[in-house]
Amino acid sequence: MTQAARFRELLRRDGMVVAPGAYDCITARLIERAGFDAVYMTGAGTAARFGYPDFGLITMTEMVMNAGQITAAVGLPVIADADTGYGNELNVVRTVREYEKAGVAGIHIEDQGFPKKCGHLDDKEIVAREDWLAKIRAAAAARRDPDFTIIARTDARAVAGFEEAVARGNDALAAGADMVFLEAPQTLEEVAAVPRLVKGPCLLNVVRGGKTPEVEFGEAERMGYKLAIVPGLLIKSVVGICEQMLAELKAARQHPLPVKEITVQQTFQIFGADEWDELRHRFRDAPPKRQAAK
Image (cartoon, rainbow, N blue to C red; front, side, top):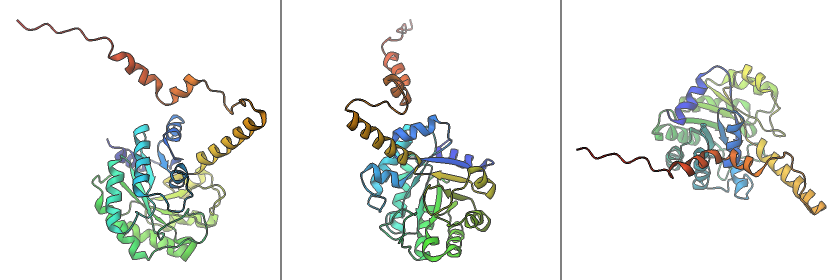
């Protein structure tokens, strides 16, 4: 079974899938180790990995490279940010095929103008509805694996209002999308209304300190959401811990106490040391030679 098929199976189950955001193989491994069912490759985190803000500065090939590294590091379905599809519908065709080759289970494509920016920042721009729908049609047609999930993300709420965002989501489903990601509803009433008004599965983007009020996962599930992504949890936590540790190192001029004590061996075990050690010994003892038939 492909990871795309595994993700489809997860969505068919009762309840809501929660996919924390990974920006590299370390965070993806930790998500898997924590027992989650899927990984979300955050575009903002990927941009940060390259040292940039989430302003549309990362190319499709850089995003796919990161996605491919993450899918190779874990055994979970990976859902990835694909920004605007990196051009028009022709570019979207290539984008879908490249993400598929990287082993990704699905992507979301948004209706922002290019270059885009984080969905929880101000002054976003969106393209004409038909231009975006052409991309969604192209994405649905381009996939070679029918289980590959196309998620239609609309940022129209901030620009053209909630009703327009809902209308775009429903049009995207009619154009071949499998799920709708209505970015940044601004009240709890809007959050609850999305799964009622959108005629298909919905994604909730959980961004602490963003435009959307915080919703407990059980409540989001009761509202009808099928997927919740938590893109910023790990990268924000890592930045905070690193700044704290570096400040302590500079002030104390000695190794500070880590937030969690972990040995060198335990660190490597998180990243598969036991499996690699087994390989180290497997090929040392040659199997007995077969006797030639007489």
